[in-house]
Length: 335
Ligand code: NDP
Image 1 (cartoon, helix red, strand yellow):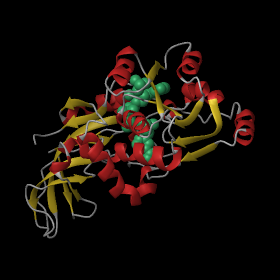
Image 2 (cartoon, rainbow, N blue to C red):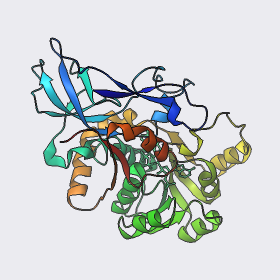
Image 3 (tube, protein in one colour):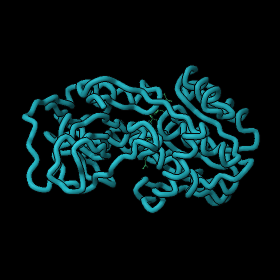
Image 4 (cartoon, rainbow, N blue to C red):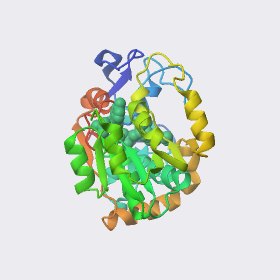
């Protein structure tokens, strides 16, 4: 087997030297255990947080430890009565071709719901993040305007499409013309703006003539600075991610905290951070709604696949800077 371990904690942007590929003898499962063979490895921005040992909502990967990840695996051998050889399971096997599990935390994937890769994408964690953050915190109403960045990505693409289903105006922000074209023409957003456009704030104003009622925050940085003055009274801001800041090496002093607080008061804004696991009780609703939307073509998704476990470090470094176009996956083994 092969695995990728955290070789060093990155300072700023992760480098190739922060990862190391190792080979290992594929283990034999003991009593009650299963051997997992990885088919799909999901790469997600939160992994940047796990590489650092600063304060966070989850423990870091130890230096020398296997990089963490959600995976879609086949049960290759089983000594556990709950799993049979050949079962497809959602697991957290990490960046490796094989892993042993005692069965805890494994969930069988229902291939009838869609291609098995979607269980780490639109029908999995990123889709559920979009669904709960938008519906439970953002609460878009018919005719309101919803803005989301990373609009061609795993979470953002679903956010805008769910906003449309709820009768809202959806405005995306994405990196570059190809992604913006896709977001409008394929996903059906009302508009999409390139965040590298020097006139971002003015273009956003044109795209949101009635102001912004829900800003689904994936990014922070310059995008937030353009959005913030355009928030309407009683706007809701689900704070989902701040990818523009994940490589920051110093915590910046609050530059305009006083104007942010003043607007929060006078405009009665709601900012609420969340981690998708906060909404675990909504999983049944999510799977029911999202799988039917996907089946009916109301929610489309795009996958961005790199081949082989060895491709994971480069693909991950690319994900942090927008090299991915859609949900970033690594094909580790055949179906
Ligand atoms: P994406 O598929 O959206 O990929 C990340 C994208 O971020 C890149 O493709 C790039 O898109 C964009 N990006 C990177 N840097 C910047 C920048 N400086 N300014 C603007 N855009 C940038 O990833 P996900 O959909 O998986 O994740 C989206 C966000 O959601 C992340 O912040 C992630 O951490 C967060 N998240 C939070 C969860 C939670 O429980 N709170 C769960 C899952 C995800 P582009 O080319 O368009 O710039």
